[in-house]
Amino acid sequence: MGRGGITLQQMSFEELSQSIARDSVPPEMNQALTGLWHAAKGDWTAAHACAQADRSRAGSWVHAYLHREEGDLGNAGYWYSRAGRPMPGQGVALQDEWAEIARALLADS
Image 1 (cartoon, rainbow, N blue to C red):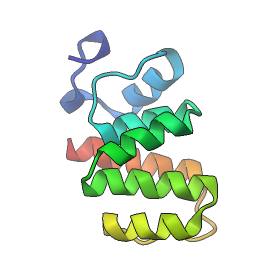
Image 2: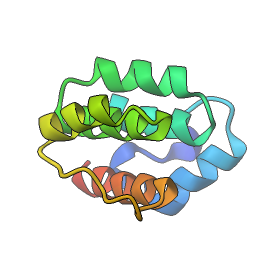
Image 3: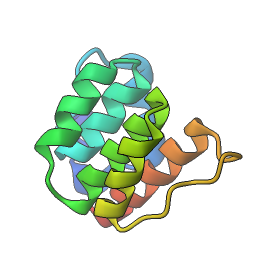
Image 4: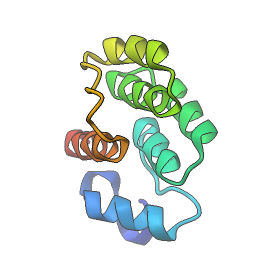
């Protein structure tokens, strides 16, 4: 069970956002979502460690996002490829991509 009795299968995007705003520790989630949680809290190092620990396409997508966030587009491109995803265009804001990834991963859980 996660915080407040919410399991990952029940967690919505809004509940994830609320956890980011109020909690100092992430709820019980898979590594990819935990990485996004840390990224939203501004802890790139913890986010990257979570993404590296998740060898799935979801983990690779988060990993790609993180390298895009840091400006390492070459490395990001590699991870987008591993995730089976195109690199977003220059006009795609990081916060919009973060929300897209979070919603997709929550829907798949």
